[in-house]
Image (spheres, rainbow, N blue to C red):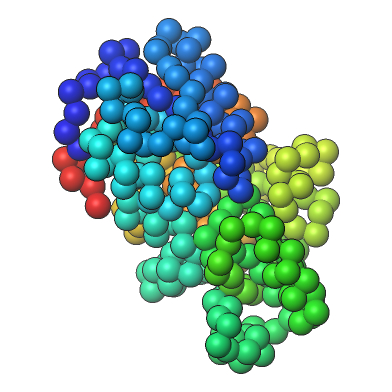
Length: 321
């Protein structure tokens, strides 16, 4: 991507977030944390709420964008495409990798074709019965239900029967999701995540973080309430497991054509199965978030992490799909 900006020190950085998006809590926390970190480093920054300021108002106002938007409209390639058209450099992946990472059925299909273990799944479609959908994928209750494009475990849950599945889908009407999927429910799996970040032009794979939750699964409430879960970073999982998920995270980065930063989520079972859940092309940037925790475990301070993420706006190749 062509740009006259050569360094953060010479740039007006706009930190983009969205106060009205489904994942607004995470977006606001990311934006506020990143803004403070860059400002304290002496950089020129401006918080910009996309709910009030459209992309078309950004040329001449900022030199590059640090993306702190999550979920629909932010992590799915749409804001990336708008910024590409406006020739404004932005942090993280381009349109294609963002769209692939966000749409879980497509992402899981690519992962499965690449030989990476991922829970069995099927997309719920109005023209097909739930029973037929489950049977086609070899699924039985309980199943995990979630939006095909979404994050933060919003509108997600475990359906132990058809009635509960209907309840979850009915409750999801409060969100702007239009497509849902069911996935193999893995009992007693431990969530773990791997962060990858470009540092001085080279991709760095961070220490694995694992989570033990007191909820039925690592849901949105557990992600917001530290008393409901215990995070371990570096992970307490066996070394051969952590090395396996780090290796698969690197494969995912290359598979979708990610750039600059990525967080990849897995489940690990008691018998050692490591299975891929999803990829986050715009992981949370809060100082209390998983990416920051993994960076700290690797000796990267929070202000340094945010500077590394912001610099990914300046290291994209001339053309990135």
